[in-house]
Length: 571
Ligand SMILES: Cc1cc2nc3c(=O)[nH]c(=O)nc-3n(C[C@H](O)[C@H](O)[C@H](O)COP(=O)(O)OP(=O)(O)OC[C@H]3O[C@@H](n4cnc5c(N)ncnc54)[C@H](O)[C@@H]3O)c2cc1C
Image 1 (cartoon, rainbow, N blue to C red):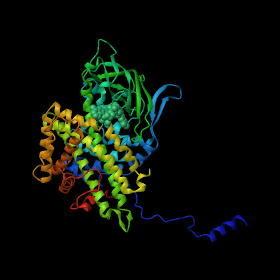
Image 2 (image 1 turned 180 degrees about the vertical axis):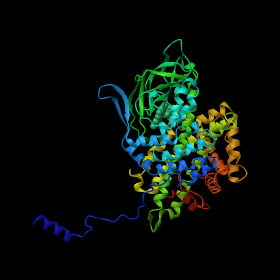
Image 3 (image 1 turned 90 degrees about the vertical axis):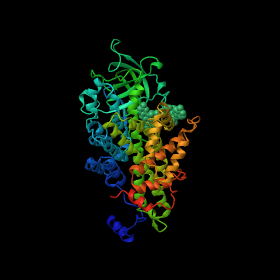
Image 4 (image 1 turned 135 degrees about the vertical axis):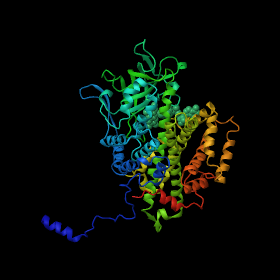
């Protein structure tokens, strides 16, 4: 038999569909391409509610990018890990991290949209809310790049403590320009900033730092002056940033830590004595190159007062903690949008999953949680706007101080369980890496650990209250603005006050107290500023003995269909 005869024999003797074992059906289409802004009712609501409507069209443009090319870039930036190169091919030490082009696309698009700068450059009401909306959408594509972006944004208030340094650095930090080249800062138009506080022997307790700083010229020491830094940092994320805020001792522990700005390149154009030891092999946040570094006499400028470094850097930390709230709310939103989209395209036992009562209970419960997380994140953004317009507003400052710690604790804690529930809604394919859910799930615990882990946030809430007892009064007064509308809320507030009657065991009880404060705050925010239906459902489900441990335990009188419809990412 010739080859032609053989081929025609095979063709004739086998059906056309040979090799096809099945037809693919009962699988949803992909959610993308979509617009992460116009498809998100709740986000649009809060942008409008807190005076940020003036940026609608740019937010919509950014939302389109998040639902198209940035969404794809998020996958690639995590698949093709950052690579660390110690030396150039000529043998020079370069300490360079190379990223996949998708990482640069994510960074460039975010920086051009003002993810890191908007409230510092557009000082009008709503600017923080706009920026929060940008971060919220960006993190849905890739939380990892959120790290250098948030550090760059948050460094600005700390740097403003040192006017002679700020005048050269801040205009380039707030420029909406991305320049990833490994060249000195003075050759660039756009700069990014990292932060290195954590050492091997102490992260939460930075007083355990052993890094030392010595004035380059003994006659010229103190704020704004040049120092040499010797020590190590156990975590230094985004080591390709142009400079890092670092804590070090200049004298004894009692004299306190000071804050420094340590550039990658020295002002004289030589490579600074900052050596990346290795990149950390993390379970999540893979696009972000977290490193271990050594400073072997690295050049740095002192920022702010000597021995007051924690106070200087705390303004940065407060902003990054707020961004953890937003980042975790974003993980919730992305996971929920996928869960609802999937269940609306898949049937089991004769009807679509999202039409079945128990699944509706789960999806609606998740959507209430997601809305509540976004609500308090946006409330903090609004608070930052109020403070930017009126820096002397003590009430808002006290509220912001304690609310950020409460929100960071609560939202970050809730996200891991939330993300897992969304995976379960999707079923088996929800754990497969083609899907965004596994990546979101691995991101979920990270925001809870960095920038002050759970216990540290709870202790911070107590510290704020102990330092200024008025802080608790201010926070309670903010919550009570919602009083008188729901008996459940009023009763919950009454019980909450009792938590502070006997303070002897307050540290031991800190988690449960902060949890209750968080739930009351979410309820109050939704009642005061939110959609009435959402507020009502939150009150009915969260303030009436709701276990909170698993989702899908809503009472029967919640309009679950309305919640699912509201949270559906309409294409
Ligand atoms: C992905 C990633 C990136 C990071 N990037 C950076 C970076 O760029 N720069 C940087 O400086 N750091 C960075 N970190 C470090 C991070 O900020 C620290 O890991 C974090 O602050 C916790 O410190 P630790 O790891 O030393 O834990 P520890 O301080 O040892 O804390 C361990 C646990 O003990 C708890 N704990 C601490 N004190 C108390 C107490 N008094 N009572 C009860 N419980 C307590 C904490 O809440 C925590 O759960 C990063 C971490 C991660 C995971």
